[in-house]
Every structure is written in structure tokens, then in C-alpha cells.
Image (cartoon, rainbow, N blue to C red; front, side, top):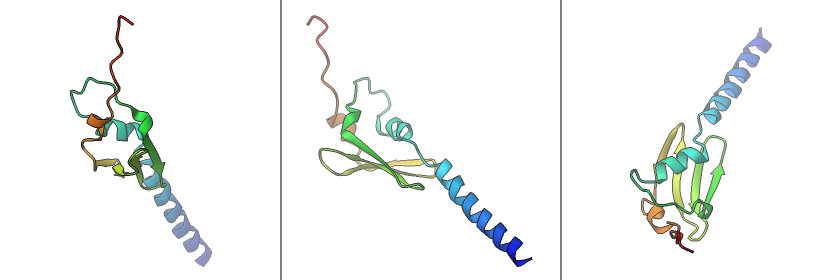
Length: 96
């Protein structure tokens, strides 16, 4: 009986860790939240470094080494609201 109880506790623990990881925000979720609505310019996403810590994820700027956003359980919070404005790609000249 004790081994069944231990197995159920272990299964609940592993299941809860798997569940939290499965609802962890992806890099696409961070990009959707970082880009302001209505912004039509292209953003240099290569400056972002995405880190997934199994139950927590965050992005940081490669150049400034500062946090841009963090996510936990389908929620993404943008820490640096001005990052997208600073990392706009220059528009290409169509006549070049």
C-alpha cells in the first residue's frame, strides 16, 4: 500500500512539472507581446536571446545584456517597453 501511495505522489509531482512546462510561453509568445500593436516596421529579433528554464522563460537583449521580457504559465510581462522602438531594422531602398 505504501508503494502505491509513493507512486501516486511521484506521478502527481512529475505530472505537475510537465504541465507547468507545457504552458510555458514560447519565443513566439514573447515576440507577440514585445511588438507594440500597430507597429508596421520590421524589428531586429536577432538581438534577443531566449532562455527557457523549464517553468520560466525570459528574453534579454544581446547588446545591452538586460532583460526585455519574462514569462510564466502563459503570461508574458514586458520589462523593457522601448526595446522594440530601439531595434527597428532600416527600411530598404526599393530603387537600389
